[in-house]
Image (cartoon, rainbow, N blue to C red):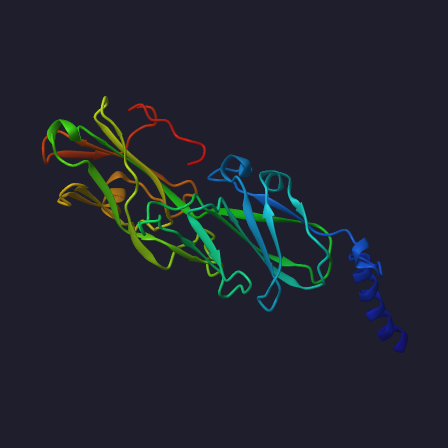
Length: 300
C-alpha cells in the first residue's frame, strides 16, 4: 500500500517534468511564442491588412506589468518569442495602431491602465486612432513552452460623411460643419468580456472637413471609439460661420432605418451621404464606394 501511495506523486512529478523545461538554467528553456490573429469578419488571419504596429503588455497575477514590447508589423505577422517567464498565469494585453491621437497611461498596473483619445492643440477632438485591442489569459502554470494565440478585436468605428449640393443652395454661407455630440474618449485595459471594447467617457468631436468646389462636395472621414447600435451618437450639421444648426441626425435611428447593425461587426464603417436638394431639404443615405469618386483607404 505504501508503494502505491508513493507511486502516484512520483508519476505526477514525472509527467510535469516531461511537459516542462528541466534545465537548471532557465535561459536554456524554449520560451513560449505568441501568435497574433485578427479575422475581421471572416475566417482568415488578416492582421497585416489592418494593423501597422502595436504595443504589448504582460501582467503577472498581482496585476503588475512584467514585460512590454513594441510590436512591428513583422512581429504581428510572424509572432514573437517571449522572454523567460516563471510558472504562473499572465494577462496579455495589446493595442494596435496607437499613434498621435491616443495616449496610454498607468500601464504599470493592469487595474489602472487605460488609453485615451487626445484632442488637437486647440483642445478639439477631431477623431480617434483606428485602434485594435487584444487580450489573452496566458496559462504557464504547467509548462513554459508552446504557441499561444492572441486574438485582436476592433476598437473603433469608421465614419465617412459626404455632403453634396450644399454650395448650390447656400451661396455665401459658411462651410458646413459636422459635429459628433458624444464620442468615446477612454478605454480601460480590461473589463471587456465581449471582446469588442466599449468606452466609458465621452466628448464632442468636430472632424476636419475637406472640400471639392468643382464637385460641390464636402467630406469628413474619421474614426470614433466603439459604440452600440442602441447608444450610437448624434451627428449635428451646422453652418460653421454662424453656428446655426441645419440638421440633427440620431445615428441610432438611422442605423435602424437602414437595417444596419454594428454590435457584432468587427470592421464597422458608416458611409453617410447627405445630399441637399433645397436650402433645408436633404436626403440621407449610405453610399457605395466609388459612386461619388471616393475610394476606401487601407489606413486612415
